[in-house]
Length: 326
Image (cartoon, rainbow, N blue to C red):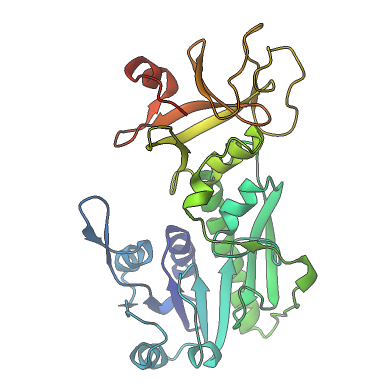
């Protein structure tokens, strides 16, 4: 089939690479314009643009995909179907109804509609997630679903380990969907609205590790935001400590190890016998371990990133930095 692919992110680039390696190679790739990035504000191409260049695929980077000029360029490609994957821009009328639009969405719809389904699934402690091929409609990921594939979320999964697996799964599922569509065998089923949950875009508040939440939840936040966004711990001096890796340490705040321990989810490490954990909201050095006290259990910070600095293990941080107030 003649396809036009619309995508932007690294996830979408992986799906594009699989699509281009099969019988439905895109006749046009559409992505967002190059943007300034990094501390030097260097103009950087989106991952999909870089992949399209590598694969020598025709590429368009319109400022506004819904404008008449962008729509005309897509129409000139004469696609049988448009494929959308992590594009980052809402597709509106009349482009929305111009032809069949298939969307690759990394969740088990109707769970986790929206912008950050992979992160939210990890944060929520879901045992599994997956990829859906759905028909794009005006609603937020609410269109009918054609195909679904499941993927387990293991205990140490981060965004960085889970997203590539889902992208590979999505590429395979997309090719299968296009094969079925070409044969006239692709069916769709409406989603159950009552089961819908929403994966809101990750904002600044989502990055902050809040001591009023259990350590097991904060450990999931660290994994969900690694390595692309990063979790942060607000310090008393107005700065923030980046948290790259963490695990749950058993024991309630202020209690000696060996007392009633936290027993829900995550990876756990016992505090040294007789030593008390940090108070809620306290950042403490306990026998060379960097611990953060929460309402339930302590979070051990294994790798951190000081303000303006590079990532380092907690031992190096404790040796080279005065412990800031929490």
